[in-house]
Length: 300
Length: 245
Image (cartoon, rainbow over all chains, first blue to last red; front, side, top):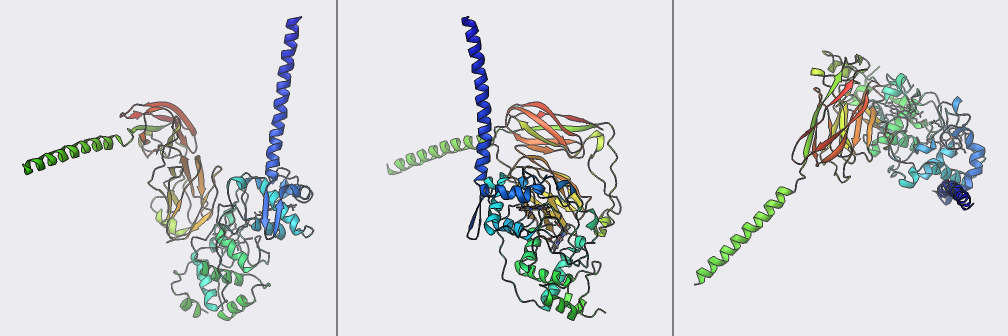
């Protein structure tokens, strides 16, 4: 009798111990999730809270980016490029160096902008507060945001006046930095290396075609273009050029890239200058452009 | 009288200096860790898989560098006498954890549109210099899983840049998107390491006495481990054999 009682109480004890640890396990992960939902984002006068974005995320984002933020939402299998995997903490559009986290403002701009040549939509129905909350929610998926700070924003000098000399200097840079290896001599995305490019998921990826009239993913303004080639688009073959271009020269390159685009809201002056100069596409086989002014002038 | 006093003082001073020198001397000779080395050879058992030649016609400046001897893929590089090159040998268990990263920088050079060396090893925190000695642009695009990923261009004639890696990772693949045949590895280890040369020989220097697990990593064949004991002041040896597949 006594032994039976002891046995059953032992069993009971073991069972309750098991139960307790299961409960505390659940509490633990719940606790961690709650901790991460404390994630904040700061953009201008707005402070975003991850916890406040749960409903909007489920409503607007989950179908592509997935419940876990791993980019494996139910629509993801049909999408190319794939929706971003937020658990990696790696982003294309940044004002920070390659390999570092973007700023909250960078993410905010991405959520507001939508991505051309991709299904990532524009969200007009969301308020600014909604979007900042969503930025905090995007961040809460990766532990990187608790161990690292956003990268240091690189300085961008004030935009100078467009001149013929600057456009020509920009063209020389396009040749010297070999943007054409991927983007092609006319910016048609048909350079010698363009066919073999792959993104980090080993999926084929095309360079940006400047002549098509589509918007760059990371924004259309001169400042946006400046940031794109200085920062590089992490997770893609598009590298960072910040170590190779001086801040002022970078504007020359922006001006030259404008001449490759069809008429848009930003490139009136550049196109006029290109026409006046009779600017021809670069010739990669020509001897190094030591004196660009002399060689571009006399050509038929 | 006076001079006698002086000479005593001088004598004392000399004795003091000698004592000081003795103490100093003994402490200096004890300062370097009684580091021993582990040396050995990595062999390949069997015939190395055929390595394809690389067609660099899309990059004439690099094709020209290899015009007499075409460049080959390097996933298995077998040398003379059955030696296996580019194997990273490192200590995977038994380190105290206080080993300081080497203060010398290692160099990764892009030359003839190939990475030289094909496999570079370094300590977490050790500096790595990336050099482009080609007359074409490269973009250096490592694909790590435990370190931050980045992608930087390096046009011809640009200065070398410096990189460090925070976390151990064996090994980080590195590629150039402009030249898709370019593949290399960066092995980020902790503590002493060696990389086998063409004859398969490797050396780990400055290993403190102790018992260790030694691991050898090869990009195609994976890893092998063995135990090794290092005695103070004595070189230890360890050999590895990978079976050709």
